[in-house]
Image 1: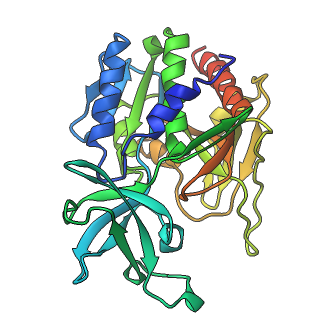
Image 2: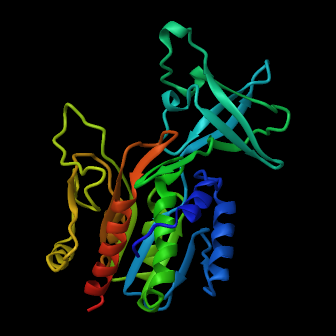
Length: 326
């Protein structure tokens, strides 16, 4: 409970798991759970679920997918045009080190702008080209993402893929440190958070847990001149989403939070899209909550996190889990 297994996190962050191409990461996580003597189930939709699947009171979920791109067209000069997978911007991919996952493994490459250098801010994917060290091996339809990096010193971790492998690691640590949670709780690794929230809504509709805890990260360095937001800070502990433009934390969960002894930061953001807890609640039964790890970075190459925030979230989850089970 007092330590993050950074080597395990580094291993998870190395996985290829782009939205729309997550079969490998689901198979790998399934194998890891079986080694822990846990019998996971891969749903008809392709999601990984385990724990109490008969009458779960609580669902704890994390998405395993990340943003990336898909190869769509080969140019006359053997470079490629790509489309996005998830909410990723061509500006972020431009000149970034990337890889393409092929049948023969990962192929390294990068993106170059088609615009002249004096106007090097591509706005559309048609304005950047992908080149790799082995263009012959790449096939139309292959997926790719950022090259993997993982650096750590003290409490700071800077790495590719922390959104959202850090929450996957947290669930793996929780079920090993607190195996009793599996008795009342259903856990899920969902695959399409970066493209749609429908898969987690489908889980809630299928299993109808009373409560749903969604684990994810929160970019804390971005501000808007047109919105009024209350954003948490890295190094100040875990964060809970209290409200968005069209969402408010369920009042019955608010009542439970009063009993928490663990400190947390409150998030209020004026963004007009439904968060995962709101999608969980479409079934009219489940009450959802977003517990978020403050980070620097958002759908870019490298994120920055603080391990003290991570440990604070673990402590908060264990405490909230006990409160919700009373």
